[in-house]
Image (cartoon, helix red, strand yellow):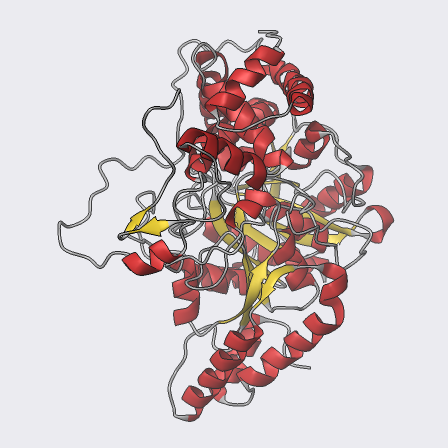
Length: 100
Length: 474
């Protein structure tokens, strides 16, 4: 397919992946990702029409458990490992009124 | 010196002729003398191990039967959750985190009487083939400390090779058990996808990850598989069948078995490695097996399919490291700024690279061209293997194209590192079992591994062949 990934593409992907990047990071990743995508061109010549995609190796469908009460993780033990907790909940910075 | 195998150790401890405490102290003494040089562990849990060994000895003395791993020392890859014991994935982003639960594998090993000696180093989030990509520094190969132990389960492989623990547990997403086993001269098994519960294994690529053992002997590997395999309701991809019984297969020999040689295997393995593969075919033929030629044309596209599928799944799995529920947080005025700052500070270079390529492969406009195509190649590989297994019971390849390489020798070239996994990746894509068995030495007198591959749930025949190769290597 010979796509040439641009610095702008990399900046967009970094934003989607929630990774802050410096200008130098963007240069480096643009070069490295382009090399990887070049290598992946070995599959361009394959005729894959009519081939059924395979998303997992051992398809089990509708895996259910009996609908019975089971112990859950200990709430205090879980919250003790969080960066910040308050009133038995995870505490985060403001989520409203910001530019997404 | 106490026995080197799990089978002999457990037999001794259960009969009372060997004390678990003595077994442990011998291992801890070796850790004390060489760990500074090897760095197999992120954490050595000697106090908990001593308490555990003493408890086992007390219970044996009281007449209790403690299970097939009584007093056996085990090292756990540091991506397996251990309740109350730090579990880092060798990443800054999880530094200091203590899981609130045990992985199912950890529970099963404990119930069988195992003594955990520590958490082993890995490439960050299991992404790598050398254990150089650890936030806590590289692990060195005990056989030559200027060289890598392989990866990503390099700490587990090194721990067994250096006799820091009798056996170890690792995880294998594209070769991360088999390749380090080959480079360190030990046995390493990647079971059939779904044969061993992944509950409590910190996810890298969920459709590829599988937990398996590192051991000195094929019999120990069979024993470990018997303990850790079998259905687990907490893993929805766990195959609904009981634990495997593999030790009974070991004495059966290979007479009449058809051993497949892949005639269109991708080139690139060193001559010494290929010579050992030829020797393995010859040894099995001498024991009554027949060698058959097979083709697996799509094998060669495995690398590309893998380096699209695995990063795509990883980019999704690693979205959870956002500074909210566990691990580190870099404070910022709003959540998005906090996520992006935390992830930038917490993840290492290779992890970021894979998140980036995975996010790109899944993004609008590129999904069909990359991820969608990779899934179709996965099907082609499965079809080719199915045709090959119509003619052969198992397939043999090299495990790694080279012997252990020097630290830093792959430089900053991700693709050079990825090529280490050429022979191991295809089995992960199709979910088949495969294992590496040490088979003599190749370049520079360093160990060579032969990889035995088998179809889904083909562990019994795979272990038969492994036992025959082990015998021939003696």
